Length: 469
Ligand code: SF4
Image (cartoon, rainbow, N blue to C red; front, side, top):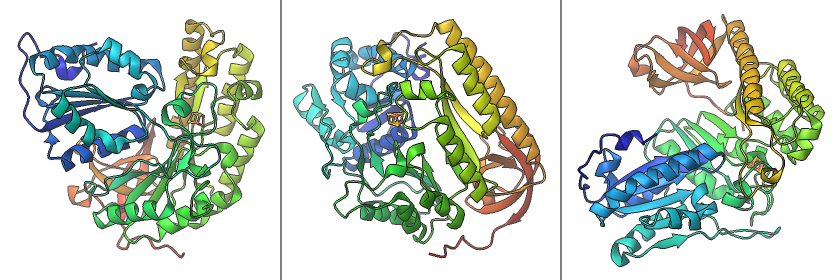
């Protein structure tokens, strides 16, 4: 499939608008956040956003390697960019993100018109690479990831803190991952786990709040293992949450994704006791079978996972719990898959991201004998159908409940309705004035559906949330 932005390219190749950029992003929230940093970096050297890819002088592809499909899309778009580069050699084409980190040589070979490849370790180098390419017209690359074997790491990407005003913002607090799950490419593409110093995170959150941000989502691959190997000494993740809660102007704090074995009692208590920490946990289960979990090198059992869910629900009965699940992992038998269905039925998640296993070259599981694709496809259909039923049932059962919602504005699909998320991360639609955008309101649910609830405005909060800390 050609990229929509290039569909109408036709035979004539348009020239670009000088000093403009376009960033195409695939993948997770970390990539979205990196793309914002790439944009700020380019703006710091005088570039401005182009209205379309074709008009941009600098085109960046911020890629994802977690599954095969986004990699194929990136290579396909790179192929379509070749004539643009040939017609206008002053264009700059850069590839960034996880695929750039893992497959730099292949990118160079398959797409010689690419001007630079920038890995995940130093997103802040993008402006320097663009300037270098414009000056030397030679291929440039930056792929170094900091090594770490238990020692303190200070080699973190620099950040542009003058971010655009926004109601909700992502804030990375940790980079990389030390867990090495056998299906996952992230430890290779993003390197070993490194935490950002607490003072830097607090400074960024303060500046976001001053610019109008009310909700921050803290990002990390195993976000709740935050705080190890810091120069300032160990800072537990729960302590970081309390410190962010003290920042004036921030009313809501979320985090994603925690790792089950690092989910300790202090974090459960913080979710219960800190009014600014939202009652939602996205806790990846991956499989409902202990043997599969072991083969995935997940460091918990189904029983331990069940215990954490029980503790969370005992502490905060209204909590929203969502998860990630993979079906068709190499060696997964029918019985083991049914085990996953049983656990999903038992734990009644509010929602789930469900994936069909996709072998990633360079990971341990990729070399194992694969479950036939038609079996994987049938399993994912069964799982999705079960989880969808559960989500609908739970959202229908929420009718009559009053949800606190941060209003984000008109719904893109139905602009006559306003949209926002509840504390439990349910999407909520209701009728109201556009002037409520940015406000925290109470909405009574009148209808539940797959993606959340619809309701009626009950009241508008007068005061900001206060934190007792
Ligand atoms: S915990 Fe596992 S799945 Fe998550 S980023 Fe680390 S290696 Fe990948």
